[in-house]
Length: 116
Image (cartoon, rainbow, N blue to C red; front, side):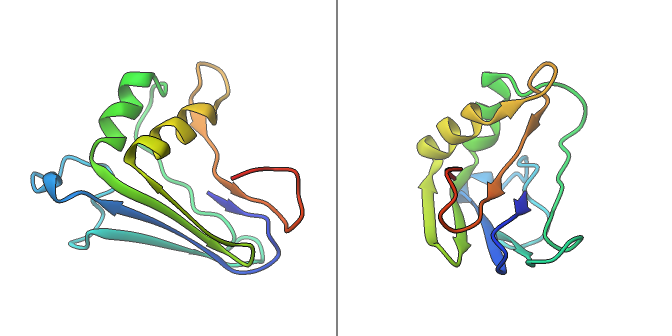
């Protein structure tokens, strides 16, 4: 996750209640929400997460997103909120690298052609 907007931003992942067994790799605390505050300046404008070695197959993404309720991206441009199905499609479209090993969420500068 990277903030290139030039302003502070936040990315909030919300877990579904069904994840009471704590199988989601997003279960980092006792909170149902995991919030990343991305500052405008490097190195505080990035948050990297790793889910181990491997590739982002459709099945792997399905397994992750079925345990997530929403993804919310807040920036100076506004707020984007996605439910589980929309988030799944969004993440699948952003797989890249050899074997589709990485997914980058980049918050662009205002007026940029890059879409979230």
